[in-house]
Amino acid sequence: MIDVGSSGCNNDAGVWAKSKFSQGLENGTINLPDPSTLSGSSTQCPYMFVGDEAFPLRPFLMRPYSGRSISNHSQRVFNYRLSRARRVIENAFGILTQRWRILFKPIIADATKAAKLVRTVCVLHNFLKKTDDKIYCPPGYSDQVSQDGNVTPGFWRTAQAPNVGLNLRNRNSTTSASEMREKLTVYFCNEGKVSWQDNHVNRR
Image (tube, rainbow, N blue to C red; front, top):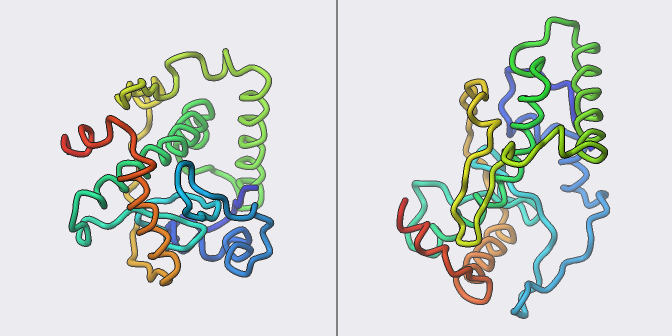
């Protein structure tokens, strides 16, 4: 599912709030799987998406602790683990824009045609990833992560156009979402801990 057509002057959180997908998640009409137990623990966890600080904290949408609110090592670990998940998103968008340079700059077309162009690019991107991935995204094109958590940046990053800064806004979170984030924070420092995470967090 993709949502195309919002004004470029809108911030990410505003675009998200107005999207049908976001509204479906809020009112429970999106058919997400039932919550599952986290590996090695008894904690029930809903399936969720990950975002950056531009997005609201919801039970189905995790965002990092903001720099102003980080008070302990566990929260830094949570942010590190979330950033690892968000790297998948960064690579997807990075490869998409690198392969389809029309997305590097404003599209000179009316809104309807521009939306069709973006949808077409997304369809072609998915098709080529499935049918000809070795050529479309050869080894080294996306980020490579070693067994000890070290990251080798993908080739797409070396030629990427400068990102436009996000227009961030503070987003109020629900109590249940904050509680779920806290449970994940505890989990990542206990049953769900990976051996290298403390070293990476302490480097920052």
